[in-house]
Length: 271
Image 1 (spheres, rainbow, N blue to C red):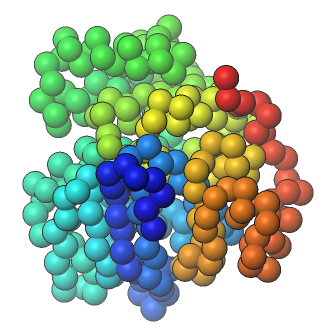
Image 2: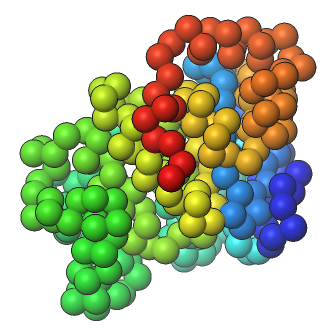
Image 3: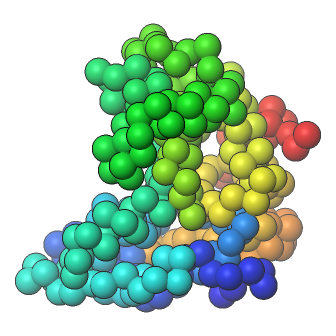
């Protein structure tokens, strides 16, 4: 379902994914228009992270279709029961439109933070290094890390590494940003600094799809919440509706369980 009257940034239809005999995704539809912030919630094993990885083809779906920024992604059966890229050149181009931020940061340990942010613009997009460096410094300043540009990831806190990973994702000027539980690997006192950055991106009108367990954040920042259960969308809608007045008994139980864990939403707050 389209959430706004803006042009579509991403449309996924009938996404299925199996690992051997285990079907993790059983036919998921998801549409994000430009400027939408969609929070995907659900229990462990519900298919949240697998869905994100299918959207940028880090995992090849078993069935379904994808359209990114108005462009149909060419998918063809690969002989193993999955859909592979019909054109590797198209997939490389599509992936620059779908920047992903992982829960484990995934910064290159042998590169400084500045080098991490400039690598893809220079190597993949062909941006001159001088220009890429200027733009990278602007992004590092944007996430509060300009003074850490020449520091290696091992000497950064988890929160700093994740903010650096967000800067790296922004460097390709993506149409859609995908976040896979970006705060789950952080110590509680570091969660707020990352959520503040993501909140500011939402306020800029960035299109984002986030797998998150931060219910307060989802309520305050997202304009649409999707509850996945057993590889299917069980409930979706406005945050106030889905999180405040769930129709599904399983969603109500899930929210009750999450509510008994700490919520760091008060740390990020909209400015």
